[in-house]
Length: 144
Length: 108
Image (tube, rainbow over all chains, first blue to last red; front, side, top):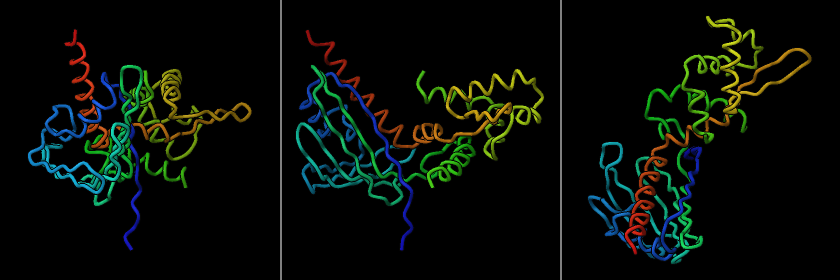
């Protein structure tokens, strides 16, 4: 049996000066300069449930392939896709983006769940490693 | 200041990191913490206040004795901040936010 990796989630909130539909469409339009899918060397994108995406872009100085499968495409409220790359260490992490109307603006919430919570995933800078090791020990004990 | 900034400030100082290393081994009195350092009790107290402000230590008062205890939880903020995807999404979302802000400004 493959041992279960400890995982973590990241959540971001942003207020975007546009309607939910505009932000939603921009998010999934690879020609839009502001989408995370823009700027890839190679891109395949089929934003429908069970459609797949693949892109390669520069991360930490190396070309890194990313791929996943769309699980929710509910315009203009929500989009969800699985997400795999070298940085997920083989785990199928899940990205969920919701777009809520907030006056004239949109509250965008991005949750990236199921990311590996290991030292390699968190710390490139040696300076942090000692600290994160210390943190790991204590945090794991407290949670246990 | 947000909590992450408080935690980063707190662990930026080598003496405070040394204090946390000591406390990671177990709770200690202020005098015990100060012992290996070449600084006054007053200076140690100041460092402890900064660590306390960041939530990295708590004080347990037992009679006249104050025991200082290490709290690891706030370091989680640092650990998520240094995750690749923390930086990746922050950059991408900054770009998205800036794009629409700029567009709105251009509109009459």
